[in-house]
Image 1 (cartoon, rainbow, N blue to C red):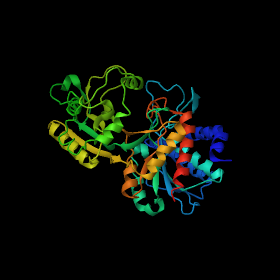
Image 2: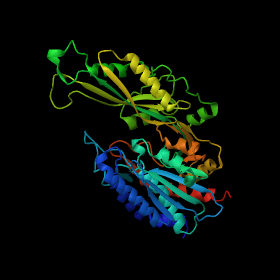
Image 3: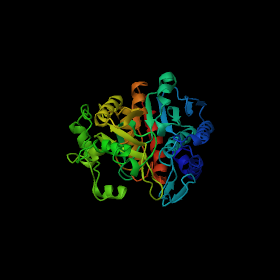
Image 4: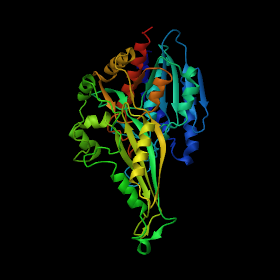
Length: 455
């Protein structure tokens, strides 16, 4: 049986196994789910051994364990390092938008709904099942290593030193990351650029405790007033970030890249269907697709402070907190951006309160080469799996570990994503198209077959 027939014969089995993994609420940002994170890592370790990996290990870290597996039985063939993550975002839903239990997967209209279905358990299992099909058919053309972490959604803090310390173990000819999206089922695309990330907290502290607003209003500066004034000063009316020096290192696109980007326009129809909004916002001199991929941003992700319960409570709160992220593009430096924001906040802060800026997470922006033999193999594989030649695009999200693969392992990276724009990752009703799951496996098999012939 060839690997494609094996895939077809085991479609339902693969789906049930994905459901089993999705039932584990491996939320890395919530400490109470640490046992679930451990359970997901053990599930993957055991599963990788069961499909034929010759070595599987859990590497403990100061945080969550790293799953490693390898099969090196293709003498003289290229070695592929496949990256994924088994941790997921929280599934909190204050407005009750989930139509089903986020950790009890269900299929509706050809989509599998569950937290982590597309980000990233589903896409990770797509790669695992492609490898399983090649091994089971006795036609594995490449050597394979898996590196699956449990902290991607909380900053990958322990993965960076792990890669530095285990560079020889992870050495490969090419690295594959399935954690991105395509433009559409009939319009496949390959992401070649990702934005970097600087994540920060801004805390404003005023009085030692909440105060009665009638007794102290007018003589005590309100920390929430200060905080929202600082945040409002971060942009001008047209959406430009006003932090001094923020754009100094931003590179402009060359004509080739701009032409490629123009093949995947972000239409008003797509904007409205994906956001529920009528009017877009942002830098007017750039097209929406450019704002999404080649321009940096500064976003407020959350605000905490004061009374938010039912009814009123007339206080001047003692504290206000904002969480912000800056999405960065080449050649912006995440740590330099943190310092620029810190300096700007200091300029905006009055003497009547204490303002603190804390750096949380950092990740470098990345662009992968378009002219490698591995990228050419990926283009052919997508055309085989999805029936159309893919276009190249930059994505606005961040996968900071890609830069480490390039810098430390010196390995070219292929961002082999199978998600769709409406998969609702990080949001209620996250889904993964079953068609993408099955076609993704076929695409991955074809890719490994093709690069196996490079020797």
